[in-house]
Length: 58
Image (cartoon, one colour):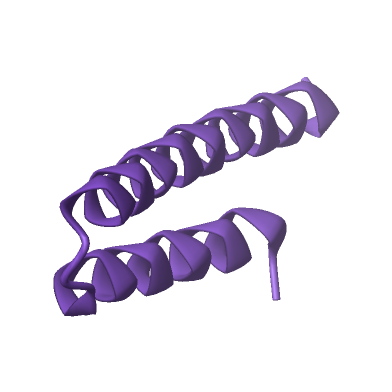
């Protein structure tokens, strides 16, 4: 599994935990963690695209 996809999966897990917990502070922390995971996944995806673009001949 590609790293960006794995990180997005972690974001989904964090969102589920945030929805399931009764503690508002923990829920906020988990939502924040999910946002951070998504941001990191987006950065990795952009880096992968750049790498593919540079490796193309021509």
